[in-house]
Each structure stands twice: as structure tokens, then as C-alpha cells.
Image 1 (cartoon, rainbow, N blue to C red):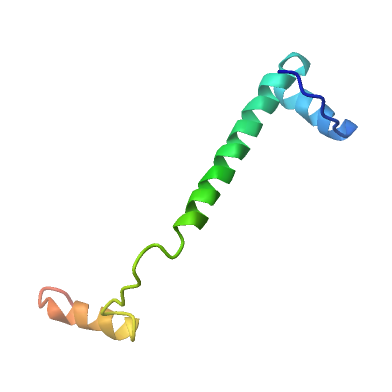
Image 2 (cartoon, rainbow, N blue to C red; image 1 turned 180 degrees about the vertical axis):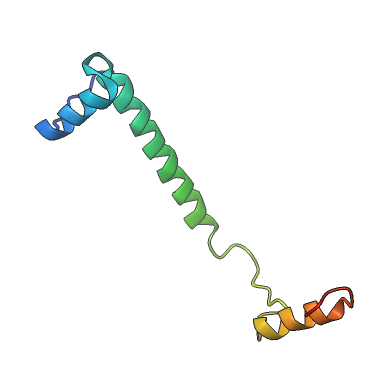
Length: 79
């Protein structure tokens, strides 16, 4: 399908430098596909927000204390 888009001259110059004037369409199509994939991933992430049950870990109240306890629990470690 043909689509008409308008780009600034400096954008077209950079596009031609990177893709070549005969590969504009395929280059733009690939970038649009990547952008749409990224947008879909963000939609999926946002849809999943809040869907996992909040679980408090044993380290949540004092992470430094938990790390120290883990280090001292193994006698083979110096620490």
C-alpha cells in the first residue's frame, strides 16, 4: 500500500546517507515495524501492571541486614 508522508530535508538526507536513496521505503518500513513492536510491548507491560500478587520478601524491611545474615550463615565465607 502506498502512503504519503512528509519529512524534513535534513531527515531525508540522513535517510539517504544511511539507507541509500533506492532503499528508503524498506528502511522506513523496518523502522516503523520496530516502533510498532516496541509500542505493543509497552501495551503488554502496562496491561500486566498490577496483575501479580504483591509479595513481601524477607529482605524488604532491611535489605542490608538480610545480606549480612546471608553472608554469616555460610561459615565458608568471610564476611
